[in-house]
Image (cartoon, rainbow, N blue to C red; front, top):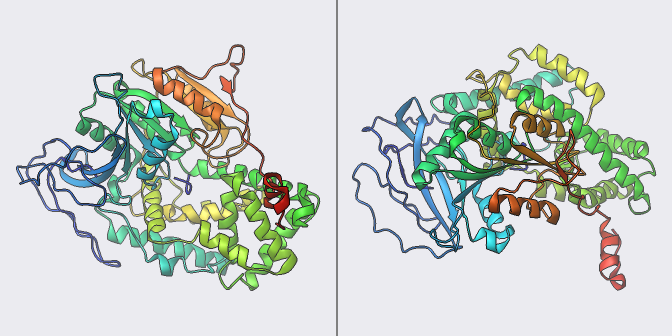
Length: 542
């Protein structure tokens, strides 16, 4: 959930000034009573003026051709109990080619998860991956949730070049002094966010993001919306369905958050499932020992892994990849097995040849933090720390992490420090929305991989139990994100559901754990073997 993953009009015209880095962000002033108006769409990357409060508008843009991407900005209340103070959301739209009078299916909102990820690139992906005849019947809407990307204000709390400068302290503290350094970093981040965004943080919640979605629906003039949400986006969709059940046309929840565990308990569950997924990677590497030469058993490869990690503590690869950077890189393998050959090659190159370049390259490619990543992280914390209660005593965290590390050493401390600012967050956690069913809801499609590390399978089962009209499509394996990721079987089920509401089902298959099932995608193979299979005359060393 952590990685993976502008409509100009709305409720009052307010300019929100963002302070320079390191300074306090300016608060918006007062404004006249809000009123909604139509959205003003235009070419992406070009600012648009607001259509509220009688301001002079530039001439409306020429109607965009169907299938083109256009953008707009929507102003929404910062606090829905006091709608006079507003913020803006950045949106994009890929319009369907089918006329509204001829079998158009309305709008499809999409969200990739996070919290903290932009949905605008996902909108383009969904438009490209849906069958053409189906994509043509939707207007596909992406949006940057409050605080994210081109929405304003965009939360940023620290200088990423300084805060994330590698190599960082080892996530696994060896003594009280090392632990104190890591606790101080977490406290520093929480205080930086609190000092700069004290007027925003009380309103950074999943519930308010769901209300923002309904503001988007209203601004679009739609009585109902369809929605596709991945990972954290599944939880956002479930909250929207709970708050606005009569405004949902189709609802697809992919890689599902367990609503019983929001959010501290969810992280403890992740520790176990990521450790299992890491062991899967090590065993896969062992099965290809003829290529990687790190050992023929999972245990021997695990020994090589932890020996590498220990050595990096004193001699970071390229002066960049220490133990914490290594953990960050290889946690990516928990989300998708498609990176396993690349990461196994980097592992082998370092252990067998002392070659640090592949490790450094993997760091640059997968985890190096920039301003965008820091914005994602700031919003991630702002939402999760505010959504629900967290332990406020570091002693409680330490007790839980020491116990969990003994069972699941791969991710436990990494995950703890990623979320540790919530122990010191200026805004205490609230009470999560209680997810509940409604007779007003349509049938719901759930898609889930059995060994998903980021959102364990139990979450999908729980969501299926909570929504009586939901049906669960299961895929073997552990890749995070099922539909529109290359599994043609899953994509056929998605297309059928979006088209006419047909739910995943197989005659005689429905069980306590699934309603329909697709086969997993192909197992990854070392690059040399993939090349040999494609062209035996061009075999190269992996």
